[in-house]
Image (tube, rainbow, N blue to C red; front, side, top):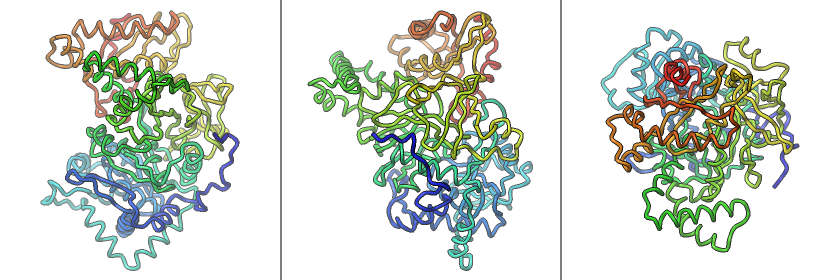
Length: 603
């Protein structure tokens, strides 16, 4: 394995001689032509779309926007699930000097209003009638919008509105521009490395979302460093399903494929991810911990439903796989891998998987070890919107489980006196959109203060222990970072999420969200009566089940770090709820405030 820590990125930052993403994209589209860039399902059949399709469609969109008054440096909002049109708009806007800004489909009309007004977007793309309704609800309160463009005409063919048009009409407008191809190339050539490539709004866990300005230079650096540590191959198949508003999915499904030419397959919807995963069987796959936890939970439920012989075979195969992952493969490992683990990997769509990555939230080390035992290499990395995605990551052949790996080549990491992780390098973002005072708070003397707490080991690997704002100081003066305790609780297939409480209190308690599917299965198997989610949470057998989980986790922690009492949040939460961010992270402060009565019961 190569030592990449001392590698130096090109100066100035370029990728294959190109100094902006759009210049590189234009060159790669021309070079790859009819090769497949994207696949998307249409009436149940996967359809292929080429690099030429991407370029031609983006050219038409970009020229059409210019005709309608888009000026350089002006944001354009995109409100849609993942699809090829998202990417067509993304590169179209960037190519003509605009700034693409994604909006989560789970955002409410009032959140859309905030994002459009904060960014002062000139145009808004929406996927369908459902998303268009959000605009119509706030149309009188978003004065910066010149036009709203709808992708899908379904249910809207008789609809008419002076500020609304359809994507097909925008294509026609752009295709009708005189000398369009030359004008489009001229706009691309105007792009500069320091220009804002995209506006990514933070998840808003500690206040209103802020628009992070990520430059072409930031993204070209991510392309370069990614190829050093997480190589992507032109023949790789990928599955895009995380929101493209999130910087992680943008890097994985837009920037990396531009750099290397891999094929991106779009999941049909968030509800079909596991089915699409099996259909595509991607060579590389990136997901947040919630997805990895869900796959694990499903497999463990299947195990519980198997025959005694099936459970025995599964456990023997898993033990053999765990030994092999530690370099101690037994003589029978080939047997267990071929007849059991291989079938398991096919079942979850990981039979062709070369490597997978996880990030955006803490994950249990035991979960990574479990995946290793079934033959799936899961690498944990660390980053945030403000580091343009990745700041550190583990590698194949050097997977330091329990850490988020060493820093990217060409960057610097240090730990401040208060334990805060600080990052310096070409991946640090330009700053917050129209919020210079917030930028100055987070970037000081060239160092980005991440707000995360951690330590750097002697081997250079970074370990995240929590958030500065989440540190619990007990009444006895003990400092506790709750992330590790929460992570261990979430390793249980019956626990979806957990929030540890205890700041300025005598002992620790926890609020727990149960995994609905798995706990319902437990209740049915044990003939536990329930009528809805609240009654399921109230069932004594369910409370006892979660109590067993808490007791087991407590064994791994010192007395002062152990959970004394717990309560179950008996309301099902989705990304539309205020307690959750669109990336399914619990907003700790909001949860503590909303469920104050539950917390007080434990004290």
